[in-house]
Amino acid sequence: MPIDWWPTVPASWSWQPTVHVGALLAALAPAGFVLLLARLRGVRVSRRSRWYLLGSTVILVATLDWPVGSIAQVLLTGRSMQYMFITLAAVPFLLLGTPHWRSEGRGLARRIVERIASAPWVGAIMLAGAAWLTHSQPVVDNFEADALGQATIRAIWFATAVLYWWPLIGPGPERERLPYFAGLGYLVLPFVFPKFPAAVWVFSTDPIYDRFAQTPDPWGLSRIADQGLAGFILWLPGSVVVAVAIYLLIRHWLREDRRLGLRERLGVPADPEAVAALVRPDVPELWTVVEALVRIIDDASPPRLGSDLAFAREEDRVVLELHVPAGDDDQATLVRVIEAGYAAHLRQYPEPRAVVIREHLAIRVLPYGVRVS
Image (cartoon, rainbow, N blue to C red; front, side, top):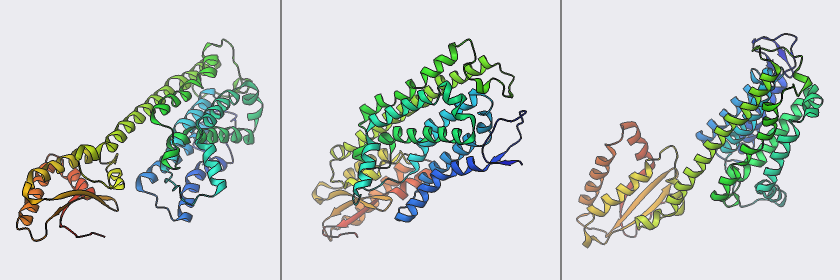
């Protein structure tokens, strides 16, 4: 397998895999930096975060190295694929995989950097400027004539995408993120920005970039067809990604609204951290189950018992604590009735899901005055 430093224009096209050391290191660096920083700060990286970081790294490796990196040397289509993969896939996955930072103990320099990154107008302006400037004819034909120029342009795409996505999914404190309604409008921007160079490519009747005029063509496309396909990639797939992001934001908005109203609907005291722990995309059934469990407890508790119900959190598990008078003869019967009702409700789920739900949601009956550490 050939080994090189960075993808370059080949004399003739070949689909043979090639390892480009510089591109490979650039692809591995972002996730490696996140994991190293988390290790130095003693921050736990969850399994979900690791999957996001792995996804970001795989996308970057395929985008900067073989095969997309090689295609980008001979076709404008490949270059457009690089732009879309970096700005709309690799960077969001990287930020989603970065553990959230605590707001306490941040130094002045860090607060300033986070404040700049959290300002949506900064990311919007930078992403728009990068989209228009880096697709201009002088940049593509002259600045990207060598590997250093190409690496610089990809770094600009990456950095401006980080600034753009940070106010939406950055790892800073939750209060510094965009409100949901503003986020919906903000997500339209990456849908609009690439449309301008894409429109020029689609409707142009002459090749725009001299750099791609003499390169070998793996698909037998004319230069006009290559420009049209590159414009199509910036238009349709990018629009689909943005539409998916808007859908996910609305879904998260609705889930957050439900979480905020949970205490009022259930009518029980709730530790905010315990309520937040119920917002688990990997176990969405927790919402339905906790409401059903509260109904089971209400039905099983005799009015004369004088019991109180509250939420507590133990690491990754939420516990519903039912406090009853000490020494009450009905306590053992109450526990059996509640457990039987809980087990009956969980039987509607497949056994593996029921086990997962029990791992994240439990019920405990305690006499008044008992504290669980």
